[in-house]
Image 1 (cartoon, rainbow over the protein chains, first blue to last red):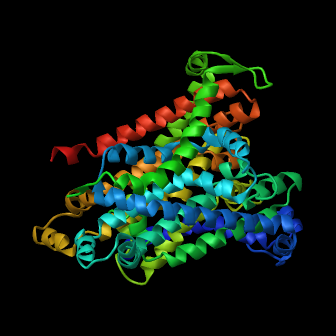
Image 2 (tube, one colour; image 1 turned 90 degrees about the horizontal axis):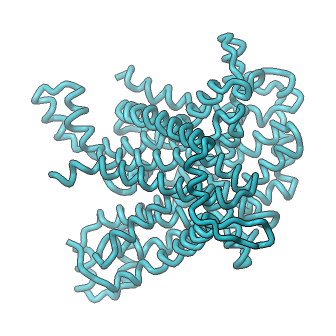
Image 3 (cartoon, each protein chain N blue to C red; image 1 turned 90 degrees about the vertical axis):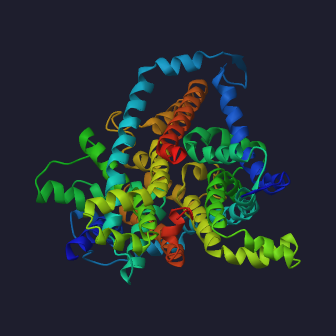
Length: 265
Length: 288
């Protein structure tokens, strides 16, 4: 039994090492970083973090990212809910083909869409807005949300719907007051995944923005190349991008395994 | 049994419109480019299928595709068995379960360019933890900006670090859904650990493992940001995977025609392979 728990322990250690190094780096001074190897910061400094929180280019990067990620999560879950209900409860002409077509969009390489997306969103006048990135991320998040919600909804017995209708509930009232509470963990998990994939994606977010809606990830790459070798600053910015993920993951910790299985266990 | 109801189309209409706007219009743009030649000024000339022929015959494409297939193969062959092994060793209940799940999922929530930057800092020869350990403690020469082998090992380990947890979490979800009675029955029959794995755990994990293999295939085949930030496709072209090459052609050289043709071929390969995996892995379900 002791031997067995060694496997996850070693794995977690392996996962934490690069993260530790990033965090340790963010508290070092540039001099210390360039002077050579040190396992812990010798002289602790918060200068890197102070610079990020006082420079508008930096902290607006975070605000921009959080704005479009939130928009995307809300849009994706809202449109996916009725669609997932339809897929889980009804059969209609072309349902299987439609479902498969939705999933194929999850397979499209983002690199393929970068240039056409730029042209499309420029043409409709949405270039460099938060909503442009939020809508673009729907390409892969909406199919995923439909897939997850459909899994959770299929786990709810159909008798629930039928009983509600017999009791005289209208469809919207049934959906909001009875059905939604029954699948609330599924909604949470779907929202978590939308947040996750919108937060980590960079290529489309960078292509669709210039100044006003520039995401933190793009600020990082540009600063890294323009300001030369400011590793400490880069490490601090990277460390701060881990925090929102760590917060949302804490909220779904009890559903996370089932969520990754898309509700299908 | 599902009810026949054509009005269900109203429920899927918002999704349909939203995804179609994002998928069909850009896709038509790509198709449009792929059959035309341009000399700027928005002047386009009909080119037929020449670009497709050119891409399919070009050595550059073959090389990038070869590297991509090798990368995806390595990812699947390492991450899937490793993920199952870790899931099997994880505690089934108790206070450590949420801790394991949260720490394991953490790498997946880090923006992809930060993952690349983090591994860059981690592997710097003289000041990175791994780089210093390899070069100065073990005395093995390690510099991924110089050595293609080191670059390859690094991008594979980085992806194992980044995504093995996906397989772990999926396999774990399958494992905890197995009722205890199955294990008790196996114990009465005196089944070996291997027999328990082969006849109880593996069949129960089949659905989730199908999802895991599909997702890992698609995402590793489409990977762009992490290796681009870490190695920039180098040294030389040694880690220029398909997406990296595609972006180089489309946005670097602005060769829209060949880039569009390559995009469509790329997408077709992903679709076909995903369909193949899905069909093979669900083959037995349909028979029984």
